[in-house]
Image (cartoon, rainbow over all chains, first blue to last red; front, side, top):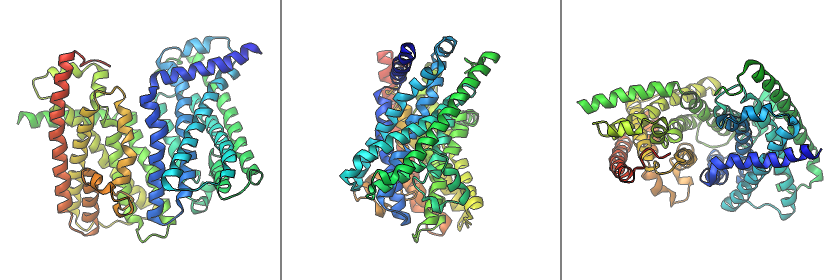
Length: 262
Length: 256
């Protein structure tokens, strides 16, 4: 139990620090804190130009959706980075239990994704003059963490697929693009074709973004409990699928000696 | 004549390499389509007098810019990683003649982005486009490609001192989309943004493409776009000389 906890916490933090050893503040700050502001501004002004929705709609939608960048890319790099530094085999050959090994690496990613989204929400709101009621701050923080959790579940699948493909950056960008379109971050779900809004129900962010917008409009945490529960469920399902895929591709990699193929 | 031949051969070589790169040849082509799709949905759902045709051209040029901004910043850095930078710098031709085709190659991929986005709008969103001045439209695209290549070249040589040049390249993607009038009219942005957009060739390239397609007079915009492109290349050559001289003095040319 203690060993598992050590692998979960120490292994997770060490892996995350290693990630930012090469990411460094020169990459971290523009990517995590500046780009989301421009994404918010871009879509808020497109919304103004198209006369579609208020600035608040785009600030909340894009701030939350941008958490997908750290969640998807960091999880993919969990595999890609280890492979690049030729440490992937050493990790996977170890007898460490896989649940704390993989999920321990997910925890810092969830926290980082939440930090990115929270920063974007606060800064975007200040720049565009969006007023969020003080009573919504704590529930919004919870929703942001849940959204980052759900997307990290999807990121776990991304990490698993990265055991088989080389171009995980391209794959992460593609997933990011789908989330941009489907989740209602910029296009109201009722303006999307039926099949797209139905598919959106099974994607990270859809329920969290809706919950955050309702909270900003004055709803209480109890009012959006169902949406938060749905977002958690989405994250759990993706997390379990991701874990299953990681184990499957790990076994395939051992069988075909392809773990280090880059 | 020899310089033109070097430019042409290098452009062809770079273009072939980019086409085979999963990131530049596939990823950078697909990625802007997601943003174009959002723009189409937003403008279709909105109540603006601006039409899907307006969005279609804007989204198409967004794609062109993406292909340059993301990778041009690190074009020189890539040569350094591959270990070919010293060889290219030591070659008897000016280094700018080798580097400029790399960013022009990226800008050329932008033509594919433009076509893909216009077709995407046509077949998925029913945006019927009629090009009023086809010849001027083609010239506007050519001028935009050249100026984008010039701006990419300036990025490539200016960012070379930074190890993380690709981040700076990525960083300029959204701001240019926002302030160059691709999907948001400049009149909607704060007044202090306009002078910044005037010194960016994408603003004039966008205007030239829209004007030629929708029946305006694109030549002044095209002229401004080409003039700025030439200015970027000139400035880039000066920066190249300075950067290379400094790198030789400090022995830091191959420093990664």
